[in-house]
Length: 160
Image (cartoon, rainbow, N blue to C red):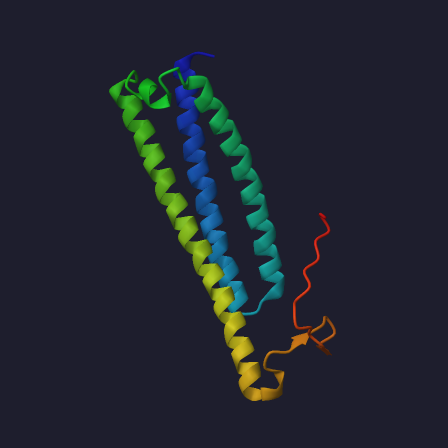
């Protein structure tokens, strides 16, 4: 495969990554809406779609890294960019910029989802402690019964 074909393939791959990240971003929004409306079936569906997007993105990333390593020289990848035609260089930089913007958007959405989940958890715990003061500082098991806590927490690791 010639270098020209590799550059075109790399640009198309980055454009595909932008599309996958756009779908990931939209699904993250749908997940948050499903969580807010407590639609658990839609939440599960959105989570499965996110897993599919993540797997696809991982595959694309490994292929892109492989292509970039084939295009690299001893001087590095950026040295090869100077050899490109102005049109191809422009398309590469546009694709890379769109990819960076979409990555920032996905990061923002997932951070928003994380913040939402943490806030909901904290508010729920605070409401429970305010409504039933005797629950403050207690630990509960999976069945909802109070569990006596020790002075020092015990952390178990199956990896030891």
